[in-house]
Image 1 (cartoon, helix red, strand yellow):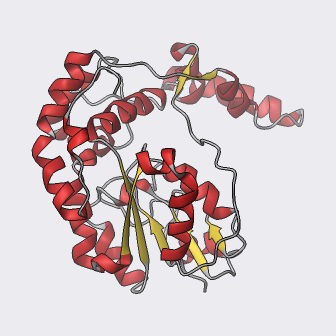
Image 2 (cartoon, rainbow, N blue to C red):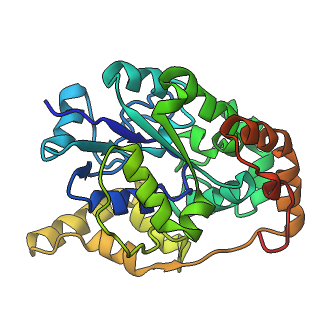
Image 3 (spheres, rainbow, N blue to C red):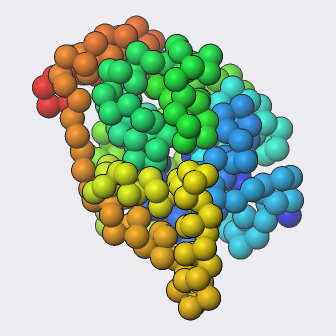
Length: 308
């Protein structure tokens, strides 16, 4: 069976979707669909959160790569970076695998991730600082939203603590097999990042010059209606199933996803400066240690500016 040999492990909201999109168009690369099967992060999620499918065994997982008869096969699951189990599981499954890690200013990551979790109904606190301060309670099972499928996705501090997450992969795979990419570099010099990634993977450049932004921040126009459609409660679930089956009988499939897509708009709501500054202060030591770990000056991440 064909196995994946490259893993884009995160972090979430750090450009992994864009990079996977660019790489997937290279003739020698195959990115599995769904891009994030989350197969090796069993400490993060149940039933392979967000993959849209249930993978019960290695055979199920490997079936995602049946069409990947090319030199590079990629699993791009962003839960792997903050999973304590994933590095060793991936190493055992694919010993010679290469790892790609993408990171950004942790304060920006937390802000963007909070917005994403609001959009997906994992999070129910609109205030970034309220969600940040709720982490300890949620870790022990308190105040967890009913629609949240994995409380680990609300542990913003864990997800954005780059040093421990990167070191976990350095220790298991060795630094030569791990490439760390900064989101700001992908934004400012996408061609250089893309071509350097191809070099890391042992592939030739393909002359790509178009680098569109993928997976912008999103918001539902009406969260209440979107929640009813996406996560109906017990009282309305059977009604929606009836409507769905009726529409299917008319040959109208995909109505639910089309409605959600119609109700979605690109949007980036900024948290108050004071809240971002408080969160940023907590990451100062981690930023300094990450800087040493990857031999990159990250001092500009420590200064919290109004235009973050």
